[in-house]
Image 1: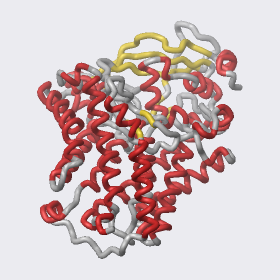
Image 2: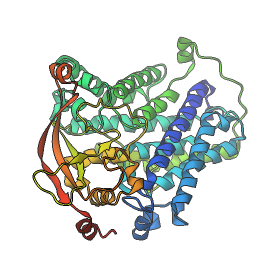
Image 3: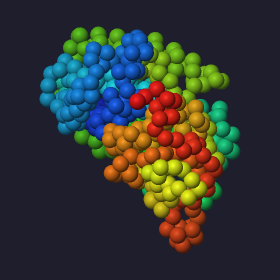
Image 4: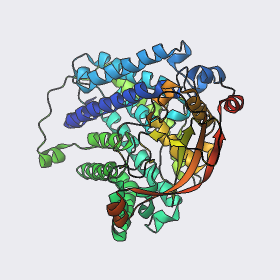
Amino acid sequence: MEWFTDADYWLGRLLFQRGLAALYLVAFLSVADQFRGLIGEDGLLPVPRFLASVRFRRAPSIFRLHYSDRFFAAVVWTGAALSAAMAAGAGDLVPLWASMLMWALLWALYLSIVNVGQTWFAFMWESLLLEAGFLAIFLGNGDTAPPVLVLWLLRWLLFRLEFGAGLIKLRGDPCWRDLTCLRYHHETQPMPGPLSWFFHHLPGPVHRAEAAANHVAQLALPFALLAPQPVASAAAGFVILTQLWLITSGNFAWLNWLTIVLAVPVIGGPATAGALGLPEPPHFGAAPAWYEGMVLAVTATVAVLSYWPIRNLLSRHQVMNASFTPLHLVNTYGAFGSVGRVRDELVIEGTDEPEVTDATVWKEYGFKGKPGDVRRLPRQVAPYHLRLDWLMWFAALSPAYAGPWLPALLLALLDGNPAVLRLLRHNPFPHAPPTFVRARLYRYRFTTWHQLRSTGAWWDRTLLGDYVPAVTKAPMERETGIS
């Protein structure tokens, strides 16, 4: 089948595969660094407890066969090593079937982690990485030219990602329709970056232009991605530029980088190659018949599974992020259907005094990414993902988001749990755990230019009240059932 492949997209495929493998590596490394405190045997939401209460069909995972922290670490580091090898080009040094098995193993390992990760792994970029990783299995390697059908499946994924995010905004918060959302977003987003303060203080017309450009990028350009070349390539280039803007203004784990990686294989075709001065494609062999059959089967499967995200896109009750199968194959995406006007933050404090009085001295725990110390410049974290910091932002929005993990976190601090303490930047009780802990709710605002110059503070904060009043170990054990 001569139509089956298109050699003009060879460079886009190569960059996509190397970039995707690099993001797999970031994802595995972030898991390796955090899993013991989050879902390990002594973590906040232990995997064995989760597996005992959830059936296999809801959460397929190799950890159904066996779980221990040591085995989990072995799986994670296997994924990290394989990701590094694929990023270095190992997939092009082996036969096609072997390359496909390597991509499939990466996908299966990360799927196994996500499916036992519970709320810590319920972010849209986890499903996005898995869906892109699944399609990468069938994109081929240096033995054959890129298959056209898989290239179109990647465009369909990028279309759903961008158009879904655009629709949820248009249907959601009215500030998107009157172009005022960006007046608030840079300050109230989950994890501001080092430039977010400056973005927040841009003039009002620039914020309106940001919102308008977002509508163009997410509501109009997705259709241009499906147009003939070179229109599709130009649309992909604009998507890349908008994602770079988002990268500089905030921290969204690997979401923006993966969106860029997905846009890269859209760029191609003779006209685009000539305009950009791209090198000529190398010589490729014919695609094996078994490979063609697998690509056709996968394309048909994605077409069938696309019914649910299409129905969701057309619904007035659009869901923002959802996976319709436990394999995270064809998902629906979206972000910031509503934008907060104010920023509230949870601040956790402890004391080693035997009783709590009005004179008690409380010491604050420091988190790695989320705002705390008002004089600390927000850090650049992405593409790394600080899961606890993100959930703290959600918990400040509503106690419903804190669920079972916030009491477990407070008890872990009272116990001096080393795995959990490693998730934090600063432990004010390095020698012995505190006798009491509490969580307080503060209203955070970016300072003005004058305040920054005079005080050196990036944030101004006002106490709203207690979120969790002072508690000690025994009551927390009774509440959580953990000892």
